[in-house]
Amino acid sequence: MLTWLEADSLWFPPSSSALSEPNGLLAVGGDLSVERLLAAYKRGIFPWFNPGQPILWWSPDPRTIIYPDRIHCSRSMHKQLRQTSWHLTLDRCFDAVMESCSRSRPGSTGTWITSSMKQAYKKLHQAGYAHSIEVWEKDVLVGGLYGVALGKVFFGESMFSARTNASKTALIVLARFLDHHGFRVLDCQVASEHLFSLGAISIPRSHFEQILRENLDETAIAETQLLWRSAASREVSIDGHISH
Image: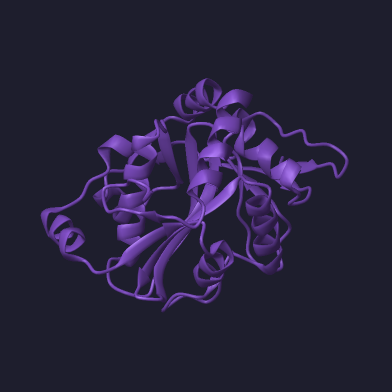
């Protein structure tokens, strides 16, 4: 049976109690407060639910991740990045990135990024934990992604693309930025062929949780907040370096 979370407690059940079908469904209910979201991410748990559903919490096994130093950039993508006129920024317009990610894709019937999710992650951004990378064509936002940075782990949430390869550009450049700053892993949550083409792999949940235990101490979390604060609104080069 699924665990219903109490409103007055940030406790989560152990990931070993998650369902195998659907893979990783762990708990129901609670809220989307900053405190609960942080408690969840530190345990490798994330919310994902459709409009009209209660809040659903997940911890899938296996877990799909990218090691930042192993991001795959194809020859054609490498050429495009070398020749592109796009420029990228960090945390310049988090709200706009999330709004773009929340729009229905062609062929889809809706979005899991509900109004309550948008409000929750905007608060998480204001608190210094949720971040975005933006791709610009002159002054037009054409791609990007957002996620949560804790310690040396970046938990990717969603990305969008209004131009071919714009979201792929955002992911590759983000991985390079994370690699430069010693991040251990870029969490992708669940598998997809698109992510595998960019170097993602699946690892056992137990291995992922061990990575979290080794990289989410309070000192690392504070250092990461300082890093993103110093990088906010600045441009990041194709090789992942912040402009001075």
